Length: 282
Length: 282
Image 1 (tube, chains in turn orange, green):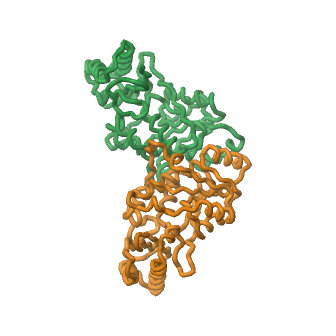
Image 2: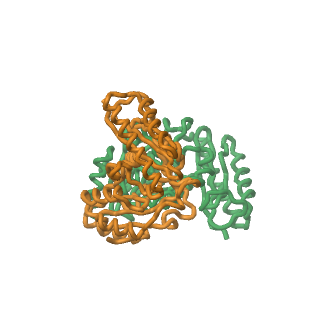
Image 3: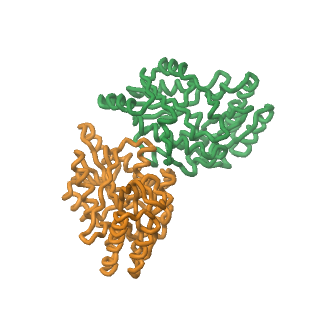
């Protein structure tokens, strides 16, 4: 496994691999790798000749009051985990390489960025789409891998790729969960033992919502109220949003029909956690 | 010369050429080709194995009150001219191919789009940078060619390419002028004989400004006043802007120093014309 921190030498390496017609998979991450990332790397490994993992905590997707400065990092362990999972190349650039002094260009996706996390984090997705575009242009992979835990992110990136004719196939991979259902996230590292126990309420409430839908409930307000009731019973878990949205528009729906996403964000102490389920409703 | 109107078959053709390691040059245009475009095609021809010309009158770079519906077109003549100039491939997509029903993604370059044409045409450059990004992703050329007549456009595109790590070299080509100095433009076709005669005042005034600078004038306001005085003597020529700006920031300067751009936009009847000169001032 080779590690690169600058664009020129990474591109040289990739150029010689592409000349041999190797297919390239890209797994963009912010590091502090967990089983979710590992599943992305393994999926890429199965579908490509070369898997590139990028690790970059992108400042433009954090607001000033967010956890940029405390975001967990452990590059040495990340390298070990990435190697074991089968990554061939790791790209770990610094801010000076990714953003010149006078960066002025942004990629924006309208509408899809207004609801859910975009509502609470209004500058977040502009940062995501801009850095992902940059990583795509640097690596020029055939395929790129994103987790469904960040459901809105994956939908926005697919729309961006389609709108801008970016010649890359986006692969969404299922959420990987702890045994008790908590979705894997680097931010789980922030949780103390008590918070960690309470955090299971996200998936439990989503599973309960799913059971209601299976029983025939189609009223979105009833679904979100039931989830809210479950979550508010846990002290210290503060709801940011609970929404039932159409998967294509990410707009709230009142009656469940077609491909829907139920998405939750909460704050547990200072830690923001998100989770979601997707369902096809008749 | 091959003509394509859809992205899939163009990409197939380009893919087989790239597999043979051919270097690709792209000349993006809105058609109604003139000597300026021809010089871009010829320059690309000299520097690449394959030259792709795109012809697309991009609606997102026109405001509602602008000349989108009247923009001059002559595709049959364009094909003849492009072939004679040495283009290998022409890409002529329609709106349905370039913008899906629900296009939501835009590329924006801040600051550089605020002054000059960006001031009079506030949505123009978002349209330009978005369509150019799309064409870059569709063709994936090694180099792309832009005329210096659209000086602000070329500077913005170079900044975008740099900020987003787009792996394409941008080549700026000199303004091509009529014998009397009028910069070649598809919009010159709008001018009646009287307006065509008056239009020479743009270049004349820029040349006069240059002579003042050579004689030692360094006060930007004196330069713009002198240009304005010359232009306003021509009845029916209405000034949109006359600015002396720094080439890197496109911000107005008061004292001429370093690489500067003197840029003019006027309206002659309903026709908007632009021109500029670049100078290095000690």
